[in-house]
Image 1 (cartoon, helix red, strand yellow):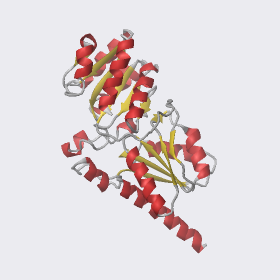
Image 2: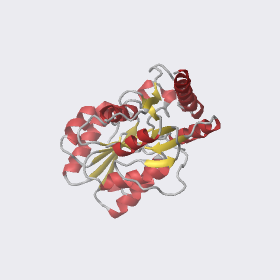
Image 3: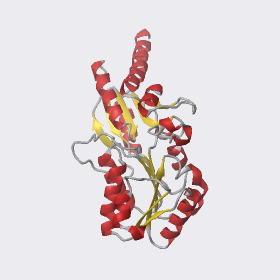
Image 4: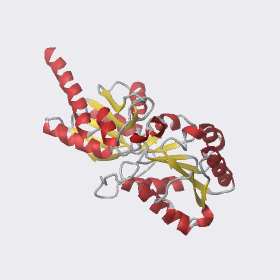
Length: 314
């Protein structure tokens, strides 16, 4: 995803001289393409994310469209006050790009786990929060955020994410992307966990459970209509995200269902539940949190089977 982002940003910068890229002393072997082609619009601010955000705000107030780039939670948590007050309060054209969100940097420990970012960013005023599910969605999201007025947050994986879509989908802020149809369960995924979610649906099909899959790259604003349609169509809504179960996609969907007329659908949230002391590779940590395909399928099958058993006893 990160390579797709940089290539797309270069294409956009060729056509729009307002586009700038700022980084916090990282991105080596990734950002050189932009730095070489647009040296006057690229700034390595150093390990100073608060300053990077302030510089971005100043450039945006001068009419620029600024992308800031750093690992996981660094462009957010370390400079949250600057993001909130300098960018969001003034509705500035600053697009915050976090790479390696979720657990890709799991071996670095909790300081590099990006598992609360969506909860924080979707609570901020005027902030658009986007978590593309594959490189195609990442390219479309970069285009869309560059053109969209106001603050934006682009949540990316670290690299090597599988391409899910055979054809380019329609990508709009506030709209979900249907991936697979199913009549029993609807799996709603946000971010790079999308491929695992599709594999989980395939495993569920082997167990006789028909699972649809929806990619929800736009978390704020959320596609409320699609969530409610899925709730009316299937017995279970299952959210899947490489993020804390608190405050992210699952919480956003829960809010929609809680405020809607009764649909009869139940909600299961799949996300990061293991404590901050868990350290290891991304595959290991996904397994620990039941966020690999087998774990997701097992959790879904368990609740569906349990619900069926209860219904049979009535």
